[in-house]
Length: 193
Image (cartoon, rainbow, N blue to C red):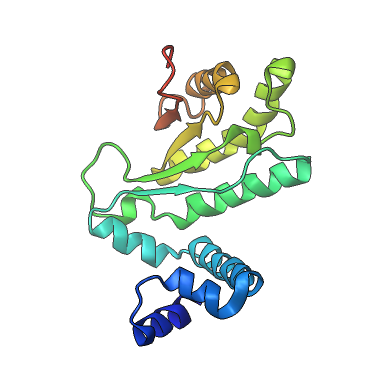
């Protein structure tokens, strides 16, 4: 669609490729094409190879990956998210595979705690933490082994205390606590951030 719109725009002498695509194909067709293009982009991003990531890291580019989506509705869905996070950690080049100075990792993975458990809310505080940790701890072990940093995405202010407690428990974990590079995304516009 983008190529069609660009070539049509060039031929018509207009810069508004999106508007031209809309006029040429109609709204329904434009939205269908846009949806298909977004799907292709998602697949390309989802299939990033270790080679691509190694090239980026070799150029000194810091790589931060984020899995889209949150708020799972089943344990099977939470397991699928955990598996996807693990797959991405393994796709990132290990620290030993890169000629980088020691210190902070240049590869980061953002994890949404609400994607690791069906309920991640204050009403079921202890259960939320326990269930999220059950899926997060193996990811942290994998991240430590590959020299990848994890970032917990707070997502919403209502999940602040849950996210902070999850981070605290992960950091005092006997197996990974002292080795894990862990960050937290906070809602910085709030006073108590």
